[in-house]
Length: 262
View: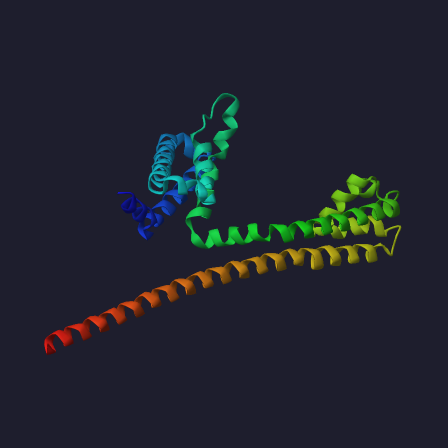
């Protein structure tokens, strides 16, 4: 019975059904933000939301029954359990904020769609390398903020009057948000300030941030390489089984031929 349940849960049709339920539920939760729709179809949206939740709970219980202790060894199962647990928590009184967290159910697509799982796994694999880049970026921001506060604090106090203000301004500059106006506010009294901003943007945006991309791409390549190795190992094992079966058939055929001759 457990094997049948496991096969049913892993069937592509069932997975497509769950994806459809997640998408429909995400759509209804979005419609609940429109007052006119809630006023005219509020009961229908609530009913769809409850049906989707019951389906998710039933799927989770079926996984627990089919996998037993192995259920807790899969991080994606724990992720699904947390999402469904948040949805089952009471959304009244001091926990009313949990009502807005129901949209987290849409994140279940991460555990259902294999391609999304691979992307998330690659990001998690890249975390150690990304932490080093974050430290480097923080160091560059800090050094630049100290320099900007001392150089331009008197000229543009609203931008560089203090270290926290300079950190925020340079973070805004790093993202490319209105950095031209920030530079013009300073260049009125410091015409050479463009050199500082140009170097800062080149270092942060075109060097450090590209390192993030390099680390993520490398992690995704490793993830794909492991999947290919697993598939090749499975194919080799299957081929070995086929070769053994062919050998057994050959031996059986020879035994039958000897029996006929005898």
